[in-house]
Image 1 (cartoon, one colour):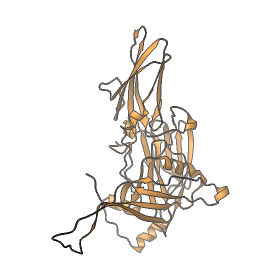
Image 2 (cartoon, rainbow, N blue to C red):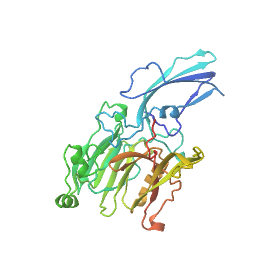
Image 3 (cartoon, rainbow, N blue to C red):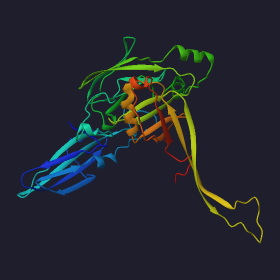
Image 4 (cartoon, helix red, strand yellow):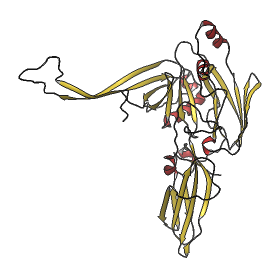
Length: 380
C-alpha cells in the first residue's frame, strides 16, 4: 500500500469524464488500522474541477498530527506512547459529475511517516525499503548500543553478528499499532548509552574505580560488528565500527532522517560551548528629592536572557556518511544527549560542503548546534 512522507507533498488526483467537483474527507489517527470508514474527519476539502480534474495535497495537513517528539527513549514494538513519527490516514473521495453525485471511494490504513523525498525522486515519494537509513557503515561509541530502525511491515528479519557468530536476531511482529511500525532493533536497554547508564536505569549505584575502567576498556557489552537486514527490497549488510575516545567527551546527536526514523550520529572530538546574550535597556530617572544614589543604575537592563551554542567535531568519518550529514542538515527535529539530559537543538550551520577521500583525505565535519530554548527559564 502507498506510503505518505509528510514533509513532501502527497497528491491525490481525481480525473473523470464530466467531473464538476470533488470532495475529500480525511481521518488521521493512531492505534490499529480501521477496517471501516469512521466518523468526524479532521478535514473536509471541496474543489471545483478544471478540465475534468481535481488534485488535493494532504501531506501538510497530516504533518501537524504526528508528534515527532523524542525524550531519549526509542519507540519499540511493545507500544510507543508519545515519541513516534507515524500516523494512519483514511480518506474518502466523493465525485460530483454533471450527471449527479457518485458513491464515495474509501481508502483505509494509509501509513504516514515524518519523512520526505528528494526532488529527483519525483512526486509522492514512497521509500518502501525495510532498513530506514541510508548508510551501510555505522560508527558508534565503544560500548554504546547500536540501533537499527526498520519498517516492521517491510522487513523480514534482522540479525546481529560479532566475529561471524550471530549474537541476536529479530523478527517482525503482527498486528502492531501505527506508532510501533518503525522498530528500533537494538542490543541496548531502554535507551542507555553506557555501562554506567545501564546500571543506573536498573536501579543500581555506579561506583567508578580503576577496575571498572579497565573492564570497560577490555570488554564491550553486547558486541556487534555486522548487521544483516532482510527486507522486501533485498538484503542489506551493515558494518559497525566501534570507536574509542579517551581524550574528548563524545556526544550523541539524534535527528529524524528522510525516512521518518530517529537516527543517531556520534561526535567524537573537540566541542566548544559558547553563549550569546540578548537584552533591552532604558534610561531610568533616579532623582529623588534633588539627589540620587550612586549605586543605582541610570541605565536599566531588562528582558535579559541568553542562548547557548555548541560546536562539535565528528572525528574521521567515511565518505558514505555524506548522505547522513545531508539528512541531518535538512532535519527540522534534532536532539542532543547533554549532561545526562535529552535536549532540543537546531543546526545553525547553514552551509555544508561535502567532503571526499580523494580531495580531503581524512573527512571531519564541524557543526554548530544552538540549544532550542532560552537559558533562563521563561516558559509561561
